[in-house]
Length: 484
Image (cartoon, rainbow, N blue to C red):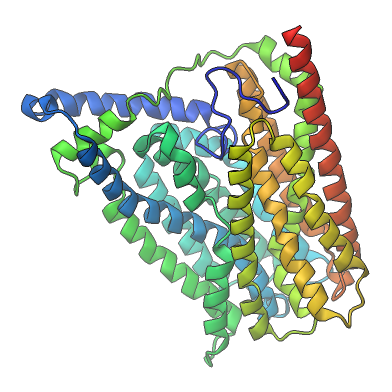
């Protein structure tokens, strides 16, 4: 066995419901139990003739196609909107938000960081809500609530108001990815999940936000463009919450646009997922073992270091581009390719990892040299070479794919339910802390060159490469020792 080889009974392939959102294992288990209760009631009342008829391959494919056609867009658009709410702050900044809200010093950096304080603090309460409330209704409620906060953002007048709204938005969005994972488990077989997750776990938010921002940049109203930007996105999110309310069911058996036969086929398709088979008893010796395991902290260090660039770019991306000499309007368009490039690179690395067994740690480490080289170029290239700086900025967005690939490692190389939960929780905390630190690496006082920010990005990527390499070596050494 090698560094990232999966253990028996664990799926360590490209992103699935266990590795997309950290710490959601017991949530999936409990939702599975609740879903089984609803399914049992449905089957008890179902016409026996419907259950007796065999399910042909043609019928199964037709039902899967219907699920894909309706459910994937619902989840994907919701996740894109959630990501847009994070990144749009950067476009707001180039449209005058800092001036209108009287931000001084590094207050703008804290506006970026505070989102993840809310995200981190509300993760556990969000998990409790997911366990106790109808999952689709909670999804709708969260989308509607953050849409209202988007509208409120347009009315903020100072740092306190802006920071408060961003903190609350972080709280609300803490449930988005766990619920998306649960919906994926609920509707698709294990073998089908990686491809479906690839649709909604993407970086296309910059495409959507860029198009909307560019359009708003051409308007001439009494409202400043950044306020109009938040109003438009908030209104769109409210409309989207209505679409979700109409079309997203709490479970397959509660889907109004499926016939009873189609509901039965849905249940039969996913009955072998076995999401509720784990032992849910906390074993404290496993928790202690996880805390004393150096691999735990190497993986946490990687997650933290890899996400510092993410937190910085989410908040400062548009300001970096305007710092190259481009107008605010052109900057909104120039941000679009970053999402396309990041998504394509993510898919490419996932395909390579799926075709080369036991290669993830190596691929993660090697692929990080690409954004590392770009960080050096952004740091050292003369400011007059703005096309070279812009190209380096674009390619730097390949930093996200290694992190996505790493999210399966805690599950693939860890045995014991309690140890998995502990490691996933630590991995998630490191993710949030990295995104909190990220905006602090880019200081408003360093504008427009942000040279210290690029130094910070370079240091983080070096740390990430060392951490993931050491993690891989330790895993390989332990597996070789175990096989002796």
